[in-house]
Length: 283
Ligand code: L34
Image 1 (cartoon, protein in one colour):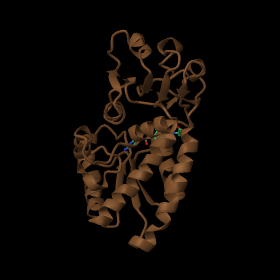
Image 2 (tube, protein in one colour):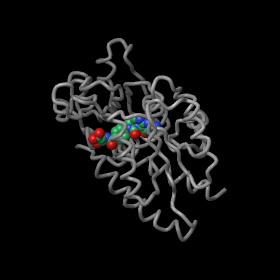
Image 3 (cartoon, protein in one colour):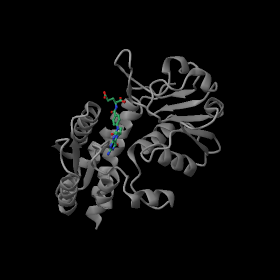
């Protein structure tokens, strides 16, 4: 079974569209998401365009601010502070990665926690690890959504997460743990990685290396979630971290690239934006 993140996200966005349509009558306006893109990284441009399109589909107001690669850290931080202070802005997202001369940590910590639609702010991360209400990062949230949608039982299962990034590996591990999986976090320095991944009933791969996970690394019947979005060095086409062709016949459930986790990331960003808007309206 192949889980289509594209189809699921289309369905969820349609539901959100109906929800948002009621907001002008109830609150006088729709949610407003501001996305900041620094530089011209083609992948970032594509993702940010996807976020603008999804906003339009849901009825969320989207402002995408494009800044040159040469913007100083201080200029970017002061732009964020202005948006923090702007009552008409509900969500702020600074697309990563940023140029080397800008501290991503500083940028993330400068975004008001209440407008942190990415769930990257240290206070949101802390709240996640303490099981308190928080904005959950979009990709991990999308992954759990897909598993549930596919009817995968998570409780009691051996889950292996390959990758330990702040954006995906760590938060998805915590979410799987909260769903009562037994979680192993593997990474580039894991000894005998193949034997670890073979033990997985649920395998989540987020390492950013094209087709890194080969068929011999996956057990028959495993649920395989591929978070990677890479360019195939030979064909130039998009491909995942998982060798889909070889593993699809073995897996009980698998996500494709493109059309898997990526669209769900954007879908959950829309959800987080609506949630930040509603929380702000209540206050
Ligand atoms: N601040 N930076 C911030 N927030 C994020 O949530 C992200 N991320 C990651 C990179 N930097 C970020 C994204 O938006 C990755 N990411 C992302 C978003 C969307 C897609 C992939 C990654 C996506 O839609 N992928 C499509 C293919 C898109 C294409 O054609 O290039 C897919 O079907 O997988």
